Figure 1 (spheres, one colour):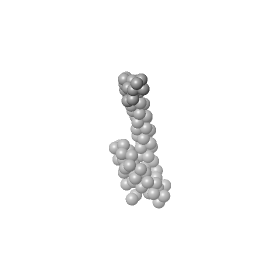
Figure 2 (cartoon, helix red, strand yellow):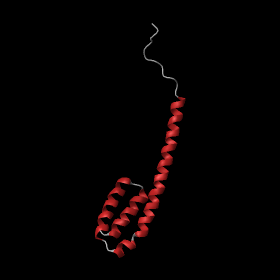
Figure 3 (spheres, helix red, strand yellow):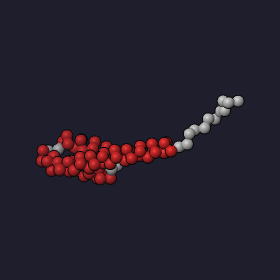
Figure 4 (cartoon, one colour):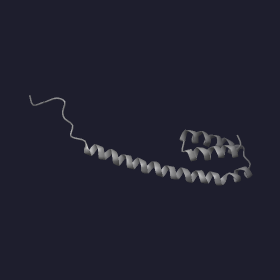
Length: 91
């Protein structure tokens, strides 16, 4: 796979936010970089920077969603009725 093809695959994976696909694409790109010429690497540099920004944005969204879910979870736990003991110790 050429560096250009691997980079296109990486961009598609980042756009779809499919982390498994992204891992495969990044591995393919790393392998392609080993044999790429400086001209080939320069041609895909902007795409790499674009994917980096996409991943940073994705990371922020995941972090915010995780915090929101934790707040919801705390709200549910706080509003649960007190647990009733299964055994009556006052016999």
